[in-house]
Length: 193
Image: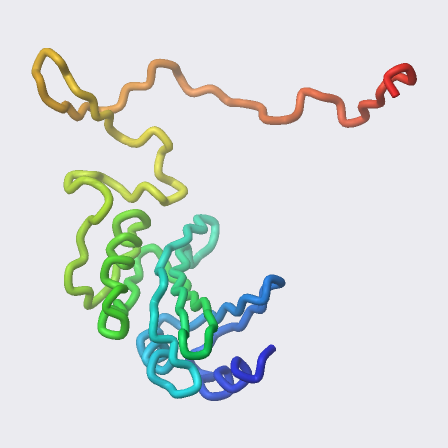
């Protein structure tokens, strides 16, 4: 671990839940959600960090975990030519604090996470759908969202307009066996070598 991260972890031990070092040289810090805004202010304004750019905010869905969602903040320090990834874990019904007061670009990213994953952000100035239609039901990047969706949108030539109808599947559900049809103990004939 670099001396920078050692100093960061020693400076803010109550904010950081866990540090993970990936094989590709990437550092990931898990932060408690209640300390997220303060920690991001520290990362942005402290002289030894200067993570002035929020590159991206995205959500990850883990339905089997008690804290179902991870919200990932990718930050960049141009002054030190470094990047850091900050993650928080949250439950489905628990709101995450908005970081729009820290990074103004976070507004669009948080709207995208809300729209596609359903993670609610408190104190967000304009939390509404950004990529799906206004009447859209559900959040399409959740793992429990059906692959075919809930409705079908098509253009009707007779009515000369776009029609939204409930989805009707033409065949009933089938179970697919994705196991390999080839034998595991397959040995080529001696003549094939």
